[in-house]
Image 1 (cartoon, rainbow, N blue to C red):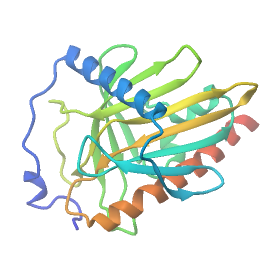
Image 2: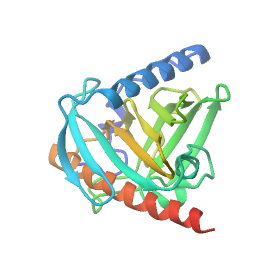
Image 3: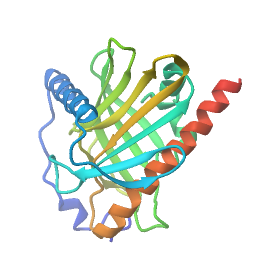
Image 4: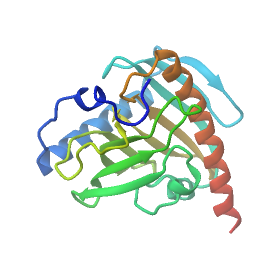
Length: 232
């Protein structure tokens, strides 16, 4: 278990070369394809948590030695309102309602839909998980049926090396799908995908219990945030 940076943490991963702009786009596009496939693939999923807002599933990740988690739930609000609460932008609404996002920073805008961002998370699990930060390339993509998606994965960037006070974590293909529900314009199906290497030396039991509970809280807090927008 680590709190902040330990000497070992600093050497967990060797630095990778920075990625040229076109490679960022290619990486982001590949993630979008991966998540679209995940959204359609119903094989191998097991339910690990269920609440009024969401059913959380898991299966082994094919990208790292951990689990891929999928959340499926319906949110009372149009896809545009739900997306407004999820949109990955600095000073956006998400930092106001998502207890697991303390700060969101734009490192580089690659084009209108692709950016490199840093997300800072607070300590969690009663202090067992110390503050983390994540550097990701993020693609915002909309599909013909009106589905709005965020698609992200970890990258290195020369302007954002690991920082003292934070354990560098690594997101693998992750994101959210705001899917319109036919005949219900004020309701949105929300699919979420998380597969995160938290870094450090956390017991597997801590990680396995954290994500399902965290995702349930995510959906509950999002529903409240969207309702606030809806009532204004």
